[in-house]
Length: 235
Image (cartoon, rainbow, N blue to C red):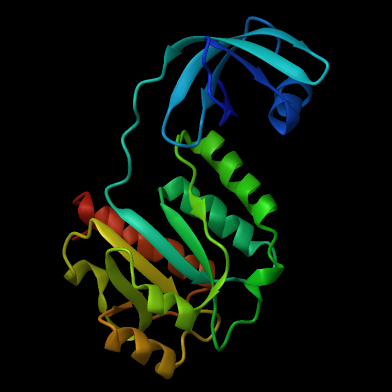
């Protein structure tokens, strides 16, 4: 069943889909009247619907029922990360959305090789929407604006603060974590000074194994390890 992002209210049991979502349904997926679809609002609600008509760049649907609530991830995670090169940031955003990361924050650090201010948030939000459609997630991952590491530390972590840095403890030794902010540095990692700022502010340094990981690999590995630990699949 096709999933459609529809953030607008649905007051009378009917909805008119337009813009990119209508184009995707009618031109790409070749949907037809009578086809079932699922609308989700990006805030946690979704609805089963059926297409009534297609034309003039619009798809009209009738709502049939609310979809059953889907279980969320085992932890509320904020991923604060330096931006990797090329299209790897898109890939990171897509996979973080699939994993259930609640919020992603692009960081500027001393060793950053990509300025996150050059990333187009509107385009990246579209990556989030498409990932939600694919993975069945009803709540969009929040994409924050870029911020420097110093400024981010001043705000404080949402939950437990964890920074990936050589010599840190294994995530498996931390025990279940229900709410955390994970910080991932750029190629070359955080400088010792940057890591020291975080540790002085009460963050815990975590290690991600003996090999050197790409930015996107490190972020996803850390998130996956926390979720697996909470679910009892990581010993």
